[in-house]
Image (cartoon, rainbow, N blue to C red):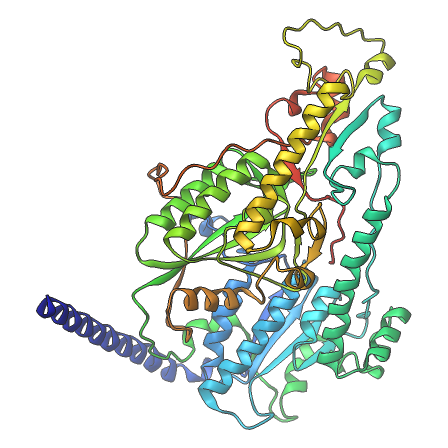
Length: 601
């Protein structure tokens, strides 16, 4: 036995040596090409921010790259890889981000700020520059949104064009309430919920904001506002009073913003070379994607085991995941199908070369049944290997439910999460039929055959039945959280009951473990898998395989959930006309966070 172990060690060492030799050879060949084309390397590399920023590279077919006019989305994953390569090349003086109206969330801005910190650390590790002599990060902004400016504050300098306006105006939210509008159509919403904090149906069932809803929105805005002000203070070296005054008196012209210390210079994009170079020798600037292959390469021997990544994004529904050209109210543009998620998770569980799995969750919730099916697969996966949850902009309600089995949860400070609660509702359309003089007559068998019928509100034993189902689901939700987060079940009501938190607040309540970006999640996964955190562990996206994988038992199956119900209220008026106002309600049932929660853009 000892002989075989020693033989395997020698084989492994031999394989490592050969791999390292190949690494050095390949890097030497690419670096020879770089020396021959050295003059093509610019002083600064440019990244254009002109579209929505995603966290991960989308899993698209190879032929998408050949579609005329198609533009690949910009992602934090791509920027991380690119900036690490740039940090390793001594010829590059820095990077410039051209802000041309991108769609950016506050959580993404915080991830960008953390990425810039890593970029400086990489530069320091490679070159040990003297203080103030490292690679620079510059932002040139044509239009300013609050998240974009927060990201820019993590840079070394910020430039405006002459007509750019500093429009960090603070935060606001204005939820819409449609109870009276629906009443004009003869429609009312009958709602049963776990507490006033679960406000997902308030838009349709209430005429105005409840005190609990207002309090929740207030604490969310307080947390985000503190993040924004803190980022500006740290990045621009201003006092709290100066930043509060600047925001309360905004907007400011470019000249005024420069006078207040909010930016460093006012230049057009074409003036950047002269600004960044000497009068007789302007700096050279080129797009990062054009010279990426010319950058200096450093040999790196990667570990045999890897970290897998599963992306679970969109409203949670039964069946396959879908992406729609246009968003559907409450459900959005992208749906996360339980069948698709099951295949991804089962593939990760069977892949021995993945030592740990990162699950990227960006979801406002959805079907309770689908959420529980995904939860079960993640629970089983975590029994086989470490699972780290990384939350995107939103991981709440069903999105938090599927995060609960993670061994460690990482989120950004601005992430929306929590919303541990249940709401069930149905539309009552009897008055709508009366308005058009339509006479509906009911014949049924079974005392509760009309439980979800839209002719009447819940009353008596039926209402008790519905309320009991809501409590059952809420108890199950809390049990999942208590077990997954190691929190006392009896104390969960104080942080649950539908309350929504920012990542900062969730950390204080024990709902997440750490505040950080995706790279922080990678480091956490490596630690849990006893792998080095020096960048030698590859990270790979996991896609559903072609072969359908069946469930593999690990422990007793969980009991079936009681289900909640959410009518797709945006379709009610059209359905009344079509005589099918309750079709959405009969089968699939949902839990979601309120659609009108504030968003920072």
